[in-house]
Image 1 (cartoon, rainbow, N blue to C red):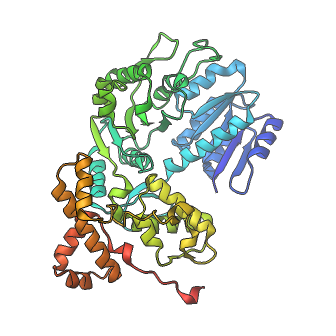
Image 2 (cartoon, rainbow, N blue to C red):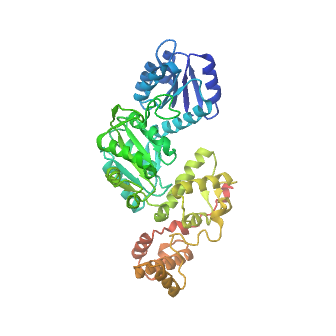
Image 3 (cartoon, rainbow, N blue to C red):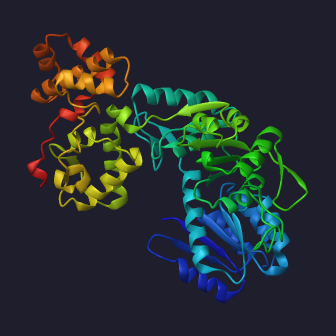
Length: 482
């Protein structure tokens, strides 16, 4: 169970925060003095800390330094009265997660603590590759397809350097996991890692979030704010959905990447920083540059080294691996005793297009597991959209089932397609192999005999088409476990 350390010498404030956050899923530890807080940090190892700047026995800034010596990755939220704002800013410069002014906005604090807990979790939980069983609570990048092996090799090549990396791919393909792996295998693994979703923050606030602002810089800027580039100095900053930045913010980001310096919004002081930038986008930035929506010079700066994550429909052989991985992890987190998959479910999952990619697959399995009444996931546990008659019309490999050959050829000509022969041969192979493998329930020996080709040729064709025999296996429920 995660732990929240609250340090405040005002009993009423301490009681209020403890009462707000204590639950079955979060342990709250209270400390009235700085010394007590330091001892609790040593013995209890909290996941997040809230520290008041003014304590009866020592400065909250001293407590912050001592606690960060114990755990350099601990997210610390600093709380201050109006008169101590500069001290809180100093804490932010040293790596505090955030600071708040009293009286505390409880709903915002609750949201802040939730984000800090998530940050703490992935700072301490390693991201590992799909090699055997991951130990403990490690988050795994799952996949053994050729394209995923290329991803692993790319991470290994670039992680130890300080190069800027652009991670591309559709939403839900796991770009943030790759960013975490790059950080955890870098020389900055013991320093700060901050992530910011550029698409989730209003355009007017994103520049302030990244670079900070001075008091009075704009309406509502009642105090100085330290931005993420200043806060993450020495560490790594992950800019998710970087393609959604406005032109003004793009210009300022370009300067940081070129010179490692910037000014806060409304400020004149030049601030130097040492940050490794990892960026991600689900957009085609080259097209965005051509359309003048993204700066060409910035594109070349963020695209020093690129890693592309393929959509799930292009690595269907990984769907059974992902399914089993999520089945195990969800069984633990949801406390459900689901251990198997009934006939037809694997085929249904393997044949779906997955527009939301891995994130959607995980959500579907979570939904199915909650609906499951026994130890086996059955078709009626799946969401309605996966049970529609046309949901798997494209088959396990994603290509359309072969209609009349002349009509299909005419359709491709009308669509202006080229390389028709290769495309039609692939679709023919897909249809023939699919029908035969269904007939023999995935048995490759029988399939190769019926097709009149060697097993080596069959496997080569299946690899080229992204097919797997998992989609045709029938998993029978174990009656003894019903």
